[in-house]
Image (tube, rainbow, N blue to C red; front, top):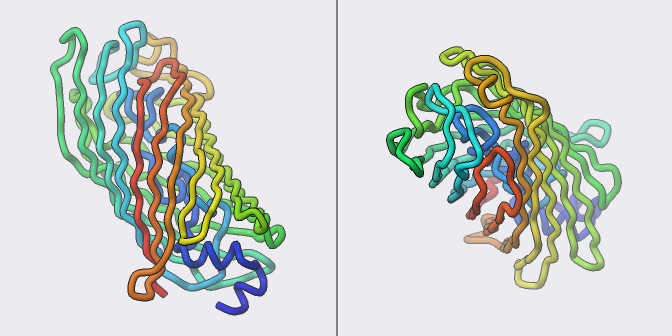
Length: 327
């Protein structure tokens, strides 16, 4: 531990105390939080605006630890009558969504340093409650609590550019293991494999106790074999600025931009002109880090308002996350 502090200084000590949370895309993407995307088939896919970036997103610690986190996202949004999405084998508009997505995630840092690189792996199991309803009754209302798609990141490779500049590279993978029925509105699973190459960067300002982190990934989907629908790639950019204070508290702002790249294809995609969509959101974040019985623990709470959306639901998301580090 002494060597870590000497090499990286106070910011690394704070990061270690906070659990050294590693962004494993997402978003997750850090904690692997990525339940919703709103430009894809079903109107509900993987990333939520502003939810993929975490504190110390670009830092992979050189220690050998287990980092366990429990996170819950509550999302409420609406797709207006003037917008359409492909869902349940048809094309419709005027939908309300309420989603509670809870996930248990484990990160293993390898404790290996090779030429300035450190490494980690991640695995997550999510459960999702979905409530989808139609404005005009074209489709029957639907709700369900189901297992969502598991995800894993075989390798996160982090490089320490300087004592205050850190970058992490990874590819997060979602497997089609969640509950899925092509005729339902409420589906926790996507019925597709998804691969998300991601780069995360963290800049630390030790004197001011300020952190700037960026997380960027592109999601690539396989074809849904039940509907023959193929989602176009989705670009996901999240940014975080955080000011830390004594006592372990921190406050800041977080924002995100989700942009569909190109048009969907197959199935009913031609009826929606590919459902190209985007969303923009911003909101506050509060963090705390400390120890419980000598175990490093951290927590964060954020709210992101989607102030702009096209061909996607527009709404609000709240994320509560707690993590602990076990040596």
